[in-house]
Length: 219
Image (cartoon, rainbow, N blue to C red; front, side):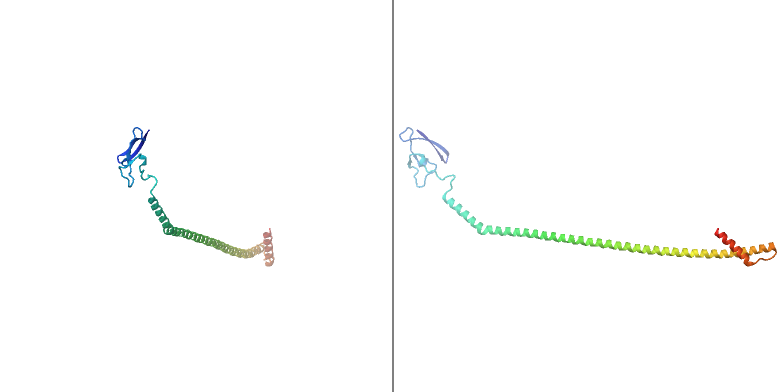
């Protein structure tokens, strides 16, 4: 029975067909036919099969020293992280957090101060509006009082002037009436004297004229 053996040499992969001892095609191999010669082995030493060749290092499984070096580096890195790098990173993060928190606190304080200033401004503005309204009302009341006083004074002056004018008109009327009565009495006495040939009594003529004028005014 032939067995196919694949080897990897410097010239690339090689396929060898071998048979068991006593079978046709049986041949012996040396370590020179292997892809890797084990340490301390003579390349001319005979081997029954290429399967007994040293397979060499695994392409997947690392060597023990590589594992030791990797584990040591990892432990060293972990220790550096735990005692040096992480504390510094933690301090930096805490400082950054404290800075952000302080900035937020300052912003909140500034906002509170601004809101307080706005509230104070609005309160002052309300007080000014109330004071201005009170002053306007007071000025309006003062103007109304002055206007009423001036109107009362003007009405009093008009009434006084009206009374004075009425008194003057009455006095003038009486004076004119007296003059008219005197003139009428003189004319009546002269007329009677011309008609009768003698002068009438002045008192009788004045009484008659006065009575005639009084009855005329009454009518």
